[in-house]
Image (cartoon, one colour):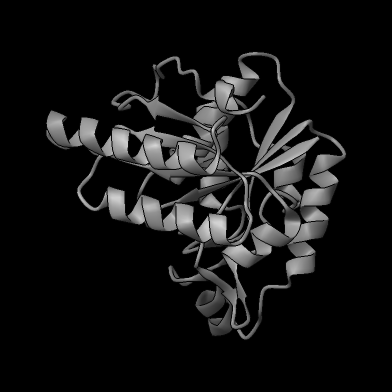
Length: 226
């Protein structure tokens, strides 16, 4: 059993699609894998991102989804989890998340946990996502892209993880948000070089631009996970 944490360099970077495509790549190779989320804001009931994961993975909703083991917290307000929870007069209990993931770990060999926003998003007034992930010792996969600003945001995310002794095992370079070819290539090289400084065995894998979700491209995202 291994749990991996998938974070993004910013909101809207494609974490949900990257997480689902990684899971699909593993499923296609016979791996026992499930996706989960720490929390989902801007929805009620089963987390919208979990529903999207299952569609891309090509499977129905699971019993673990209906039990809310794959996303223990959903909130109506589309905001940071700590604020969305506060608006409903509650707070996120880290132990609830830990217990849910522990139950998934007993059933599946690989658990992919998608974060909400980036590493420094607060889960409550006293707990940042990065500190929670570091405490769990989950290996981290970062979703980046070629869009302008990605170099800065990606390197800051790498620094944040490194300063907390998080093991970044790879970066998914999401090609959905295109830039000029010269920018795309240069950004990828800078990001890859910096990644290797922190972890020589880590990989940067491109996620192709997806135009048709009925005909998903083959990827080698599975190579991020030994």
